[in-house]
Length: 323
Image 1 (tube, rainbow, N blue to C red):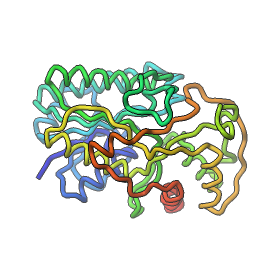
Image 2: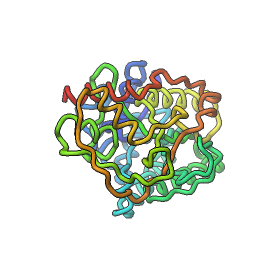
Image 3: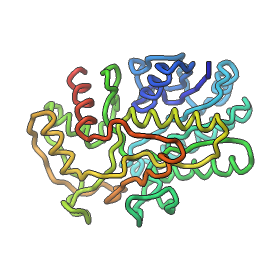
Image 4: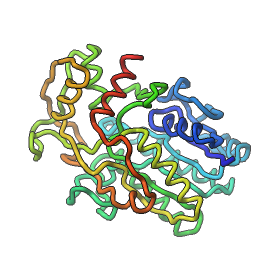
């Protein structure tokens, strides 16, 4: 039975990947410091509660568990926070990833799937944006992801690691069975904020900027269902273990929705109206991010199953109501 270690496996995306791994029969180990994750989200595997900066403890887990591949989700992810507190992001995302990679090297583990982001592209000149686009992040969060990708590229060239960096676009939705779902302590994602407004937990939903160069003045994003993203991780893992070469791959559906379009769909799905307030732009937000997903379809034979904004909102809403 293949052993897979998942860092950040108690968080939103990590826990959905752990669930899929467990359902497929993989033996799963999880490292999470529970700073933003939750024990309730961990449905499979053995959990070690520790921080990645504790290299000796991480090394001990690697030597005990002996995984064939490591999936790395642990990190700070809020763009606006990264602008206000960049040092936290460089320390947690870059510094702790280096600690992890050093422990992996000592434990002789060299297959690595990295949770990257479309934020590495900054404001791309080509839409949909291909993996060959220049990396020009415009916020510290995106910068940390680009730095880690460069580290991985250098390690791969030195023959020390095999990796896939999966560049996520906007991840949304909850497990279709309703067992787990979004568990962010800081609710910054648009769909979740809109659902909180629909529930009455927020007095209003603020739109961050209405003067972008888009059809309705609001940002446009490519949304991907969390379980389609989880499937991409398993395919990437299997590809590497079969001898595939290291690379970065976009994870998105190749089409975008504006903030206003998402809000209208949330109102339609929930059958609830709520107050919307137009505010200023947030620092670090590009106008449009849409994936060119040609490469991941060709390389991994990834085929999205739930390419539906309605479905993503519906599963997230059901999770919100349940919890």
